[in-house]
Image (cartoon, rainbow, N blue to C red; front, side, top):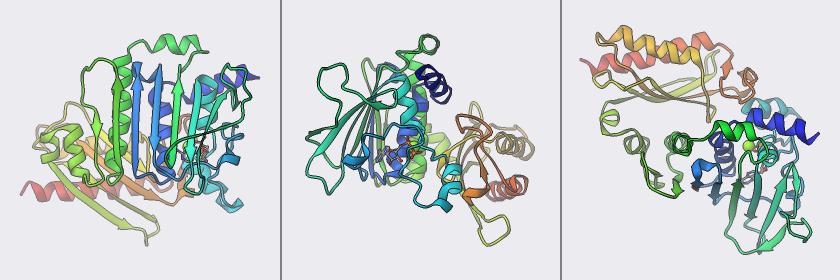
Length: 338
Ligand code: ADP
Ligand code: MG
């Protein structure tokens, strides 16, 4: 049974950055205004995330890592909505099957924080002879999640991830993208150990989206951005979108598409190829685009079940919505080139 759970978990969590994405989304769902990420050995040895969100109640800790335990389903009619958002109570459970997981959390109405350790979906004493009950401890309001020794029990996954630098840059990539999308939330990401390639991420609650894009992707991209937006929420498409697109004077090394659907970082290959096609047909030198795009759709129109990691996402009226997005980007590009 625990082997089956482990294999299933290994399908959801492939690498440190997958785990981190889930943890970041949880902190954002908890309304955190400040999130700090710390990694060691590319997140393999340690992945720590500290937020100042609403915290977890003491009585919810024993079942926290049980599969399908979520606090995000309020009523039955929400079920469909919630599952399409990707809230299925699987993230912490999965992580606990492939790593050593500790949680320190405090709600504002509790006089102290509690610390709990988990292994294979359940509270654990973490090797000591004490009982496994959550222990009172000092701590600030919010939640700290500590993931240690990722894939200690899945040798083939661990083997596949030898380059800690690459894993760390994937972590930075995820934090950077969420920092852009969630401008207003102060986010930081740093690592323990020798300094290498790439900048760490550090944003303040005053940083605007273009400022964060500048910090992460550099001045030339940031200076080439045009803002676009469209509100079709009253139409049959029931959608709204906005974003920033590079104006074609500047060419990225490769297509960079930051796609958020209902505040989740996802992939959609049709959007990607339509945007690429727009740039190659609009500009003679067919530059590679940088596009940040945030789409809001009715949750029940989103289909996240195409892929177990919920990465590739499809949605209802996709073709029509893509046409609208491409038109909106084309309009600002035309405007900027005249
Ligand atoms: P889901 O996000 O799908 O509900 P998770 O396994 O990611 O499932 O998290 C399980 C539950 O743990 C969440 O529903 C939430 O109640 C709680 N939780 C996890 N992380 C945090 C956090 N950073 N702050 C507050 N609550 C959290
Ligand atoms: Mg979650």
